[in-house]
Image 1 (cartoon, rainbow over the protein chains, first blue to last red):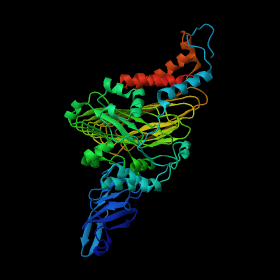
Image 2 (cartoon, each protein chain N blue to C red):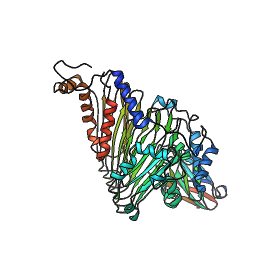
Image 3 (cartoon, rainbow over the protein chains, first blue to last red):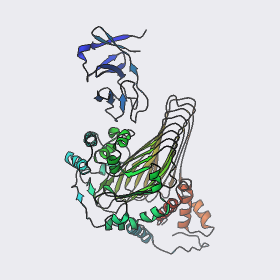
Image 4 (cartoon, one colour):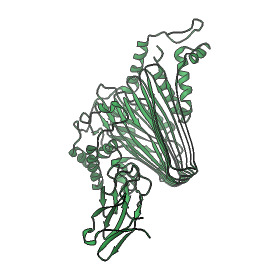
Length: 105
Length: 484
C-alpha cells in the first residue's frame, strides 16, 4: 500500500492553479487542468532542475521547464519537446471528501 | 623556405608575406566583396521589443508567431551569456548589430526577377550555375531574407515542399506550427532564444512518405552589409521512408567590425527516413557563428550531419541527433580549420534514447598560425537503450607551435549492454613526414598540403563531388603560407 499524503482542500486548488508539496525528499507539483487534477515530479528529466514552477498552460495541460523550455504533458509526464526526452514521474491524485490527496510511491 | 639541396621544386619563390597577402586577396575577390546597399528596409542597430514586433508585422505573421517571438525575446534578455566555450564570446556586442535588413520584396522564382546587384553576387558565387548542373532546388538568402527560391517541378508533383521559411509559414501554417520549435525550444539556450525572437529566412523542407530526393537541395546564405545579424531558421521533415540531402554554404565580406550569424536548424526523420545535412561554412573572419542544430531520428531512421567549418572568427556549433526510435542511426562528421585569430569550437552530440541504436562521431580539426580548434562532444546512452553501439573518434592536427587544440568529450552511459568506443589523437606535422615526401621531389608546402588532405580525406569523401573539390580547394587556400 503506497503512502497517501494530504495536498490541500479541493477549494484551495481551483482550475488553472497549481500547488507544490513535499514528501520526504520528493517534491511534487499538483495541477488543476480545467477540473482534472494531475501530479508530476518537480524535477526536469533533462538536467534535474525544478519543473513545476514553469509556465502552466491549462488549455493544453502542459508545463514548460523554466530552464531549457521542454514542454511536459501533465497527464502522462512525457516531454512533448526536446531537450528532455525521458518522462518524469507522475502520481495518482485522490479526492476524499473535500480533500486532495496523493499516492506518493 | 627550408628545402634540402637535393630537391628541386616548381613552386614559385615567394615570401611568407606575399603568400599571406595572397590568402586575403583571394577571399576578397571570391567571397569578400560587397555590393552597394539598395535596401527596402534596414533596421537601426540594436534589439528592442518594438523591432521584434515590427519584423513580425513586416511579414504579416499570425498572432501565435508574434507571441512566440516576443516571449523568446524575454528569454533572451533574461539569460546570461554562456561562460563556457570561448573567451571570444565576451566580444559579441548585441547593441552593435543590425537585426533585420530587407533587400527585396519577395523570394523570386526566376533569377531574372532578383535585384540586379544581388543576382550578380550570386552569379559570382556560382549558385545559378550549380543549380543548373546538379541541384534539385536552391534557396538564396541575402541579408535577412531569401531573395530566390526554386525547386524542380517533378519534386513539387511528388509533394515535396521546399520553401523559404517565411513563405512556408504563410502557405503551410498548420504543418509549420506542428513541428516548429519542438526540437529546439526558444528557451533552449540564449542564442536559440535570440534566433526565435528575430528569425528571418531559412528553409522549410517536407518530403512525403517514400519519396527520395535524388539530387541535393541547397541553401546559400550571404551577408553583405557591415555589423549584420543573420538569423535564419530551418526545419526539415522527412516523412516515413523518404530521403533528402540538404546542403548549405555561406560567405560574407570582410569588415573590421563584427557580424553575427545565429541560426536554428531542426531536423525530423520519421520512421525509416534518412536526412543528410551538409554544411560548408566559410564566413569571413569577422563573423561570430553561434548556431544550434538538432535532429530527431525515429525508428529505423538515419540522420547524418556533415559539418565543415573553415571560416568565421568564432564558431560554436555542436550538431546533435536524438535517436528516439529503435535501430535509429546517427552520424556526425565534422571538420574544423582554425587559422590566425580563429577559434573553431565544434563537435557533436548523440543521445541514444532507444534500444539497438547506433552512432558514429568522426571529428577532425586542423590548427595553424595560432588558431584554436576545439572538439566538444556528448555521447549519452539512456537507461533502456540496450544493445546500442557508438564510436567517437576525434583527431587534431597542429601545423605549428603557436596553435592550440582542445578536446572536451563527455560520455554518459546509463545502460549495461552497450558497446562504446572513444579514440582521440593529437598530432603535429612532423619533420620526418615532411622529409619523406620532400625526398620524393615534393616541395615543403605541397607536402604539408598532402598531409592535411590525407588527414581530412575520410570526411571530404562523404561530400558530393562538387563540394569535395571546393572543400579541397578551400583547404589548400588556407594552407598557403603555412610553411614559412
